Length: 333
Ligand code: AHM
Ligand code: MG
Image (cartoon, rainbow, N blue to C red):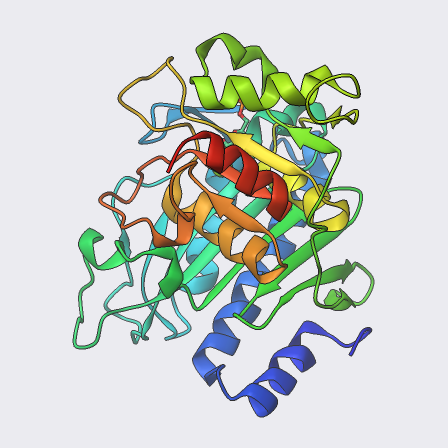
């Protein structure tokens, strides 16, 4: 099916697999359209005055970039009126966003990190949008935070856009992970790679090494062994890459293998890592598993973690299956 548009892909999937309902199709198309708008805003950069800080902070206490705020608004505005959603939640908003009463409501919940890796925006390095789709529990008309707190296994769809040299949309509806490339002249996402597969073995790892002194023993041991290279216990040399945009690091791993790690560390002992479960780790874990990879928090499969907060954090080890299994085994049974 390579070469077909996202619209046709969704219609073909709906016919063949019958697991995509009309509203989910609409939802994916609307999110894709919003990603195109974000891609255009990012592409204009300083010409449109969109770089730099917004002068505000988000719920995590992080300084917001202007493009964090713009991307969040683009996603909210695109998705609020179509009748496909019951509510939305975002990294940039403390509480869920209720669909305004003037619009009909649908049966899905949409969660997103509107602009992942935004510390890279002012230096012209790839950033992205990550999203996750859950079903709103039946009979719930006004979903609250607790209705979002479903484990990642319940996701019906997950995806990310990466705004790099090309704009890509990587998507799974539970039937493999597929990659679409934005044709800027046509304004359409075109299927360019079907059924991505992450190699089980790799010689490449991604971690922020500057935090090494704060890591726990299993992560130290694992990374020390990688760094020891050919003469060490692994008997081969490993290469390291760290973009500091999860979308870009995960996309590289989907393309050629590797392991991505953002472990829990001693800097904030009460928080398990930096990345957020609901709109970063869960969608990426589904995408990676659907491509034959693995994703854990060191002890558990990420998709099995029962969430207890919309913005809760989680340690993340994902990518090539054999490496994820090894570092998870170092964490103990
Ligand atoms: P963000 O959602 O606020 O952009 O933070 C998440 C990002 C990830 O994209 C990336 O993997 C990580 O933070 C980089 O963190 P660090 O700067 O600690 O290396
Ligand atoms: Mg993020």
